[in-house]
Length: 224
Image 1 (cartoon, rainbow, N blue to C red):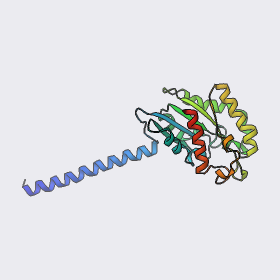
Image 2 (image 1 turned 90 degrees about the horizontal axis):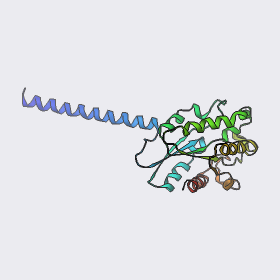
Image 3 (image 1 turned 30 degrees about the vertical axis):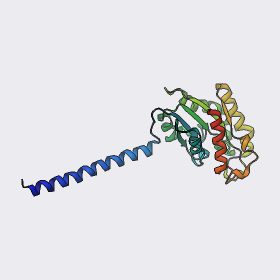
Image 4 (image 1 turned 120 degrees about the vertical axis):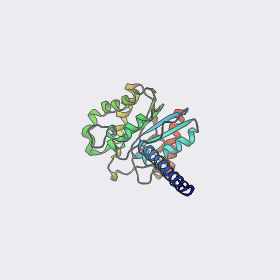
């Protein structure tokens, strides 16, 4: 084979190898983004489980900044989800629930209940405690034996989006407290520090950046 042909073949081999490496890298990146945060080494892993108040606000990011480099915080919130298994959008039926367990957390922070406060979902509240216990039990069964914190949802200032403030206060929050008490789990109250601050909510239900920071601070204080 001539020197010219050898150089040409070597050139095309190098290009092909580069393409293969690039494709492998893209595949790995794609898997990571679909599967959630990688399980980090030598950090305390915190799984933030919840609905759009977790997924759609800055609180998990704020919490990570507060906790520092010894922690890794994963956001496993899903908009519109419920504790109730009977509803059409139970958290336990979401892909993020599986990914949160694969994260193998050392700490689990669960902020759910707002979407259970829909008037149309009151029919499922008789099984709310058992459903919540089942959700919690899935995390308690992990080999990491994570510490679990139950968060009381923030207040609802406008009922137009669906969740009802009266149902939240008179039914959901007492059920959450009863669940935590029966399981001996600590409660983080983000309702009380926000109840007089409607200005910290951009639509009456979802906290803005100021509200998210208060939530993160309450959770940080509890963890630390």
